[in-house]
Length: 375
Image (cartoon, rainbow, N blue to C red):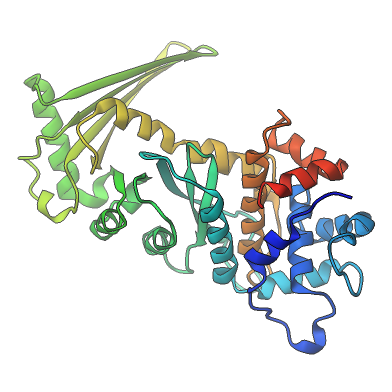
């Protein structure tokens, strides 16, 4: 008998509103949610997999779940998760993560979006859904996610996601689409700091920052702080140069950006097979004039691509998932994030995320160990 912390899952999801009418409640909602969490931890990538997992593990699941009418069918899993309010489900997840996550001062929290490519439905005119996620780089946890509303974009989703997070003492990094005065203000008011990528969507500020760095570098201005990194791997050479400055006199709109005290520039030079390319990027910052801190934060931002989006595609086959009905796609995305977080926090087995999912499916004791992380 393994000590399964079902009380923790009940505590997190027990108050979730059941969308079913009474006569259709053959299975307890908490049983459905718990089986789904266990199944996704154990390499299930759709509702048929979830139901098959439940059937195969019925005797084990029965030791800590009521299961009054056995294991739900895959249609039942699909219908229930299609109807569960995704905002409530995501709120349960975010509260759970806030309870087990302890931010470190200066932790970089990248926010970035990802499209679930096969969540479209041409018959009903449903486009693929787009999710915005927040990632804690030091703790290696997905802190929360939110679906971008139909016919909208990340600008509307990012403030809602930020509102649900505790970002005090953290450095929030966002791509150019999130470089908005209102978002900068919100981050400062939530006692965080920001590094926002700057492009032509903020035309005046963008051109002012470019002109400022051209002048500062031409004059070798003493206010410039500098840092560089060099990497050589498999014939590819990457040199990144970082500059920051708190000389903001040339910025005509600086007063309208809450917390703005520094600007940053990155020059990335890549050499592959004898061909060299160079790219320059610009940023606005609410952190002090420190090029090394800036460089580390910019590099950390891409961690959400490598440690979340890429893993979801490779280990969880997210882009292949064809769940489309109702709220099913975004609720299944939350299940993946729960699984990814718990698997990352389990460190006794030194395998990949995919290997951990397989091991959890084969070994009930190992799955119990993963679930106990959530307690």
